[in-house]
Image 1 (tube, helix red, strand yellow):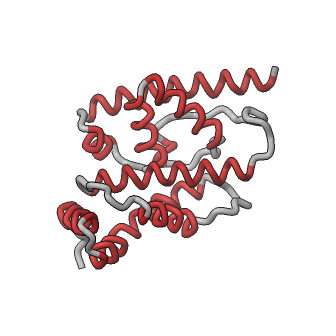
Image 2: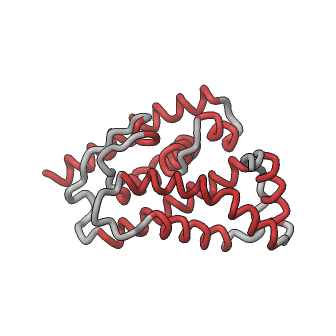
Length: 195
């Protein structure tokens, strides 16, 4: 069986928005593999002893999706963008629950490069990253959204551009500037905490 087209996913999303429960069941079957790969890739960076497992992360995302009744879905990229937001929220909430230390205590420097999306790296402090992203969103919401889509959602430059309705070149520029800004903020927080 060939993989479903982007148009099929979009059709199912719209049918789900219109109240078709069978469309949601079919959509879940179609996108589960993609979400599982994305969540598994992310969870491999979390290291051993992490209490949230890949399936648990996906389940939390699906629970969040069910609560999004009334969303007017545009396309597959829009769906995965919302999944990225939900994944960020779940991972950050889980990290907050695990941390008993004050913000900044023991924070490791983040290396924001393309390998965060496609390769294994030391796990970042998700609470500090979330806080820094919230600050970036106040200054430049689109750049914060690019990080969310690329880092948490695993979206490609092309898919991120589609979601944001900008050119891929703009996404890359925003990605580079956001990484530099976040690196500086997280480094400053780490130095402040060490002082």
